[in-house]
Length: 279
Image (cartoon, rainbow, N blue to C red; front, top):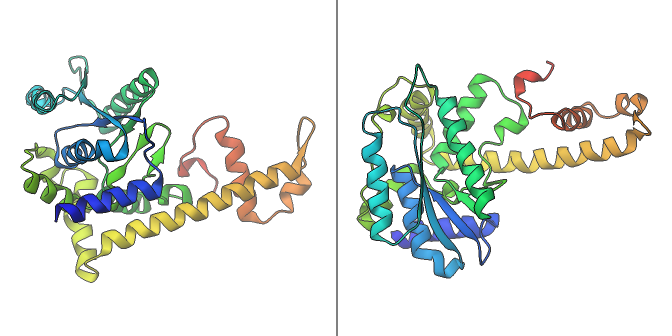
């Protein structure tokens, strides 16, 4: 079974071109099953992949036990001779949202990647992909948002997008890897938890392979989105004039291509969300 899990991760990583020999890969280790499965896989395959493996843990200091989780990750890495980068937030003042936590975490990851010339590997799984797609569709999204979580983005790589959370947990158990379960994930207080606990099981009652089907949908849509982006770029090239663009060329283009072109123009200033686009 471990060969099946590791084979699936290895095949996904190779198909997506996530690693190259000589890469310095820093695995984001939260202490949860996904991240510990990722770190274990990277340690077992670092020689075959020709990569150097390190780890990073961010303590958001949102829960009293966060310090214990940080020490758990540190002990795991020390026992295996893995270099661990640690970062802890300042003492909390007032309410701190999930968005705040994400910005803190990814801000540190990006600085760490830049300082070390490294890739940051995160433990996002196929289950996260399915949940993200459903969450974005329910909230309202366009093609780009419905592409889900990319396998590669900047310094970030996500080798576990081809396996489910349940498979990652089973891999940890078979490998004898202890992991921490976040109590917040067990409640229905958050929208993503409600999708995980209720929406996904309902879909799996229709199709047991629903997570894989949703993941394939994201992959196909990502290919479509990349094609439309190229068409939008070609349209901008055709419409380009000294000091601006020919509105006649833009107005006469296919509406889908025109929207892709206008999005490219807008994103040169800042990233867009679906809510920023006209209906």
